[in-house]
Image 1 (tube, helix red, strand yellow):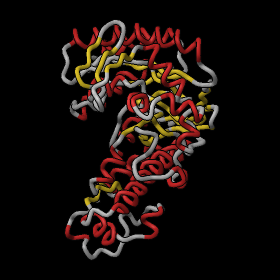
Image 2 (cartoon, rainbow, N blue to C red):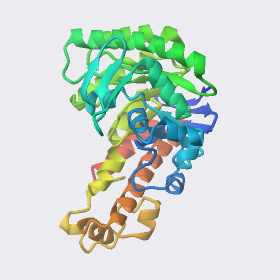
Image 3 (tube, rainbow, N blue to C red):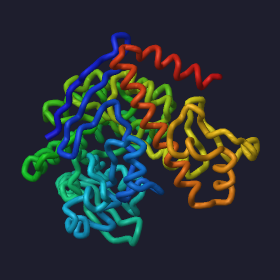
Image 4 (spheres, rainbow, N blue to C red):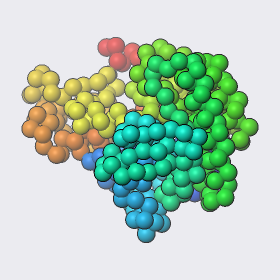
Length: 370
């Protein structure tokens, strides 16, 4: 099972650095997890990911259940061998994808009944099934099935969802206790944009004594200041001795603010998706490489970056590839963005261990305002 140790904490903020121990290796926090929806981070090999310093990947239960299916992945004893990744893997429960992608989905006490977005086939995702699938995937960290709600939602809708999420978490733990071997199950705090419901959700789930806890239902369309407010209200409710995971967040600025508030783990499709759309994250802000001013630019995307892309290619070349929709554009852009995110959390970790996090944060924003 997972073990979490805090090794340093910022005096002026709630930022902390720690180590998560799993069967497939240790994870140094704060940590960003690239999203490998279909057992791949789009356009990158696992060698690319290791070169970027990636320590843990996120896989998607819904998508991998539908294809290639557990019958295929079981032949490889799980995702690690299937995708040639020998480091930790976290898988989500699939609930958000059913909520957002599936055709004719319906929620009940039992779980989600839905039709596949691929072929229309009918399926039932229960808390027990979510654990079963993630166990088949051999995930190091499994997520409880939760009810996702849209923004905005009424207080009654948010409270109903958190209560169902609680009952599902209880069922997930029962299923996990019967089947788990050397992995860990995280609960998900819900409650919409209502601080008192977030507290209630935490109070419901913490007695389950799960190895870690996540905050779900953020970055779903709410204003940025509200997202940060809810995170700031909710994080103190979570056990200090366990990892705190903010799901689906976010921009570099989001990560810096959330780490300052005491969060440890993050995932988001933004670095990979934006890379494919020609947007690069740099220490001085975002760069849109389709901009005509880069047509003859001989410098790299970020002079401070040591990734493979910035060491070897100019902005002019990256723009040329992107404007012509060359496949190499997606590869090089994604390498850079993943490296940037991983380097960012590494810098934050170093600043925390040296008790210089406020100075890091000031420098981070100063560079972006130049």
